[in-house]
Image 1: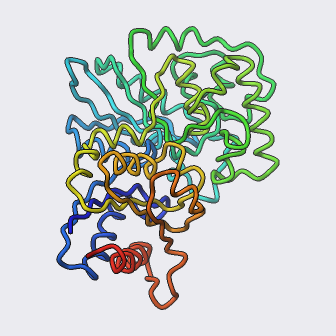
Image 2 (image 1 turned 90 degrees about the vertical axis):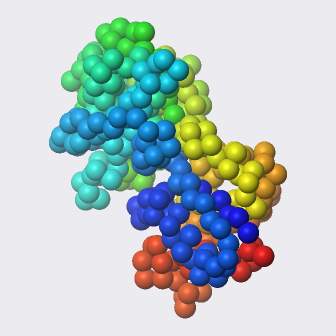
Length: 366
């Protein structure tokens, strides 16, 4: 039996590549005769560049930028020629990722996306006239204000100091930033499709995982409303505006096209064609919840499997999606590490995922 294994990262524990290897090890422990093809993926968050560099090739360069807390960090650019166009791929999490801030120092109100703007500048300095930005996994909740400040937006000192500083903001001048990227095609490859504000927006939807308590989330929600009012309220409700702590909105303010990050890596890896040669498609991520079905990797893989007429199952740390939602998404089954018997759970995340894959193989391998 041929199995296509195409997971995303298990956030905070396993990269997509490590997850794929763990699934293979566990599956083969039960079904040693099966053939497994590993295709690690990303939704635009951490791992986006790794997936694309492996699938597409190109020149991978490092550049020093301002990190989410103001300290310098090393971020990367993947530069390649595509149909005569010099294209750069960048990953916002490289410049302002949550993993760059230790848990005790996380401050969703003060973290900045300034380094993403510096990455855009670096891409343009290298002659790139198209830049694809993977948006997700950020420590910032600043609506992309820091990125715009790096590109010259005014008032720079306010925009560069985090989302909390945007509450009650007055006049904003985006013209210098827009002029700086004139003639450059920007693509925002977002991990989620939510708006800037609201229950699934930048503040109330995602700031808690960045260290924000309820009061801080309320403060940031108010700040995002002020930021939208000062710039483009209509753009704030567009799909993807809330991704990356509102970095999606900042890119939309620059005229970026928004696409699902998972769709970018699914296309780059030729997943649809690979699914057609498999008997079963296995995907997964750390938490399979309401966000997963809104443009994340699991949804992208399920779509590719559906188009190929192949069954697809999800392995996750925990599963918070009901059977009806699974059926509507074209997913045949979902399994959680949290549901493993204590006697089977491993001592490490990789061992636990392998144990889950081994158990699932008993049902699905033939």
